[in-house]
Length: 270
Ligand SMILES: C[S@@+](CC[C@H](N)C(=O)[O-])C[C@H]1O[C@@H](n2cnc3c(N)ncnc32)[C@H](O)[C@@H]1O
Image (cartoon, rainbow, N blue to C red; front, side, top):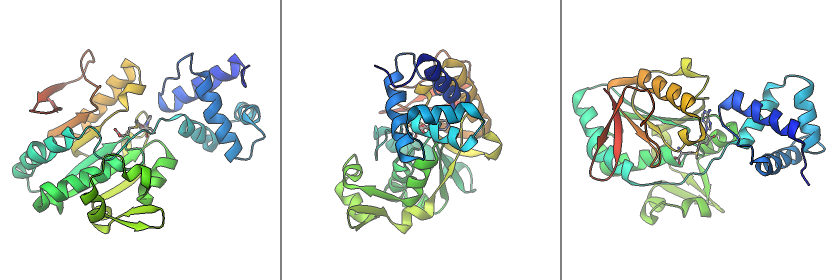
């Protein structure tokens, strides 16, 4: 037996879609129930029905944000799908650095708990150290909770065991009880902010490189197109975009062309 009825389920689906464009499929009621039951338990509610009743009774932006936050999928790891970081350091970054003397800005959009942004910093410090001082990395995500964790720079054993080579763990992290904390060298290169890809573009400034990986998969084709068109507006003329392994601009009306390298690919504005 379900914890919530169809009307409440659809109310939550519509709220999450309106606020984040994340599409909750009709067969994902179990996911809504389990995530919102946890949220209700952590918050001041007697249960999921009490939480939904509060949402229905009057507009509560903070609570809506917490519901959207609870429905995000934040799967990530250090050096996820490693090849884009090779392409970044071997090809993209040196080319951009030699074509201009300005600081180089890398935007890690939908960065979840920060591993991707810190990975970019480590890859650059290891492989293009002379360029590191010119690079700043900005990580953004819709979820307040994951941005707070990214800012804390603290990871547990399971998290550092996923994708992070041992020599980089000892070089760039210090152990504090059961956690590992990122070094000042990484903190100096990376900062984090909340940002909703379907709403908050006014706060953005021109970028040299954009990582937009493993988030378009949650959106329908119109939203993907809108987000990709926005990224192309904020990419500098020489700029490059990295998508996730299973993501593509194919069949979407954008002005990107795909550049294929030995081990990965990226996109440039045509
Ligand atoms: C699967 S994680 C990907 C993390 C990282 N980019 C990676 O590839 O490992 C997807 C992230 O997208 C974020 N997200 C979902 N909808 C969003 C939106 N509308 N605006 C900004 N971030 C969003 C989620 O909060 C989540 O942290």
